[in-house]
Amino acid sequence: MLGRPIGERRGFAEWEHQQQLTDNLTLTAQLNYWKDSAILRDFRPEAFFNVQEPDTFAESVYTGKNYFVSAFVRYQPNSFQVVQQRLPEVRFDMLPLAVGNGSTNSSTRARRICARIRPRASYRASKATGSTPITR
Image 1 (cartoon, rainbow, N blue to C red):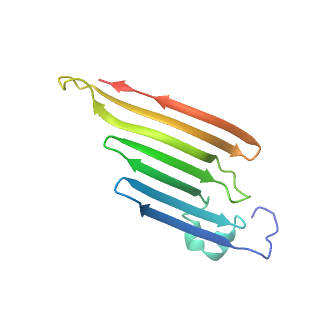
Image 2 (spheres, rainbow, N blue to C red):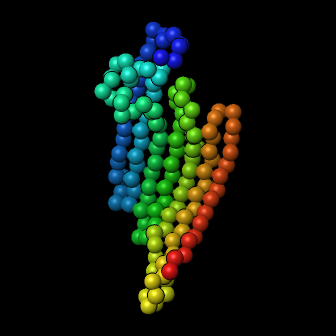
Image 3 (tube, rainbow, N blue to C red):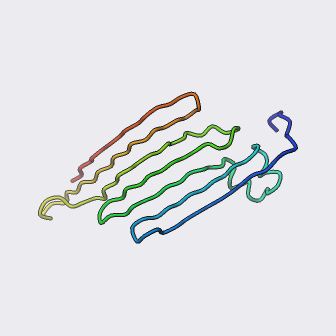
């Protein structure tokens, strides 16, 4: 399909994990390693339709009373696919919170993200974003 010969040594590995570590802390992880881009199509065609671009990541989320703190990592184990890697991304999200005495419909919410993003192996970038929208 891509015009490249397919080697004799082929294989893939898949792993999914979801765990509630404590009442407030969860862990989710997924690994998809493919030796070549056609391995799933050739050996598990029923699975290939749903997963044509394999994803490998891990995320842990801590849930507070009115906020979330998460750490997210996305990695590229497959040589045939370009993935925007996140090594790691740490995020804080404060849920909408009423402001004032309740006589107005004001609320505030905050978000802060710090990430090291690597779109390609030869390029490195760092990103920090934040916003605090206030709505009435």
